[in-house]
Image 1 (cartoon, rainbow, N blue to C red):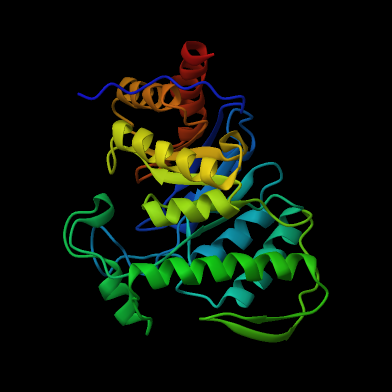
Image 2 (cartoon, rainbow, N blue to C red; image 1 turned 90 degrees about the horizontal axis):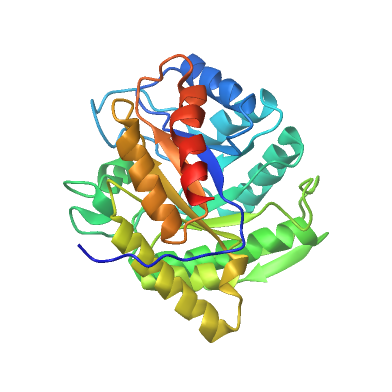
Length: 312
């Protein structure tokens, strides 16, 4: 096994939870978020952005991410919140900017805008998901189009620029290779100024360049989809991009998703400790379904507290 170097950063370690809204009733998701809102060890909560199941029965229920996020924002008080991650291929950038502004207002300034490239042409098994790219069926079902990866990156770059303009300008035009806007206004602005923190998710080398240019937070799937060694190697690529751009890499929060084992908390702890020692300072604990009563408090006691005790 490759040795993962221990990295020390000045950013405090934070923990979040993720409830994948697939094959899970709305009432259960709301219960878990409200429980997390009352557990101070958990800083944030996350959904995802898919329109069809990517696992399990194909005819199962999936809740739309942004409308669900808005409902949960209105029923929580403390948690920062967002999607890991919003697909840049589903909503036009200006519409997304308007939606994000509204959710930030509803939440009282708690939104973190998680954003990713979205559906692109990928080979089977990409992203740690076995089988054919699940975006193919999803995008065909909803009248969306996959694009080449390079185009996806270019579109994401333009979206980030449009979002910044929507949150800071009274009126503006935008002329890009993929998006064109004229006389765009966005009121009310987000509560957070100059706008919600921007999280960009992904691990490709070109995507990490975009993270170094624009993001406040970088997020990557960890085990079981990607190994600790892979996450650490990708963090090194991000550091190199920051050096080329003259940006302090410590400005970017290093966020990783970890699939929790309800039956083996010791295994989850070991994985999280390895990731923290590799330099990751934001751990999102992704909950497997179904969600037992008291699952968040149990995570705080069996994972968060012991990890903090070991890593300091």
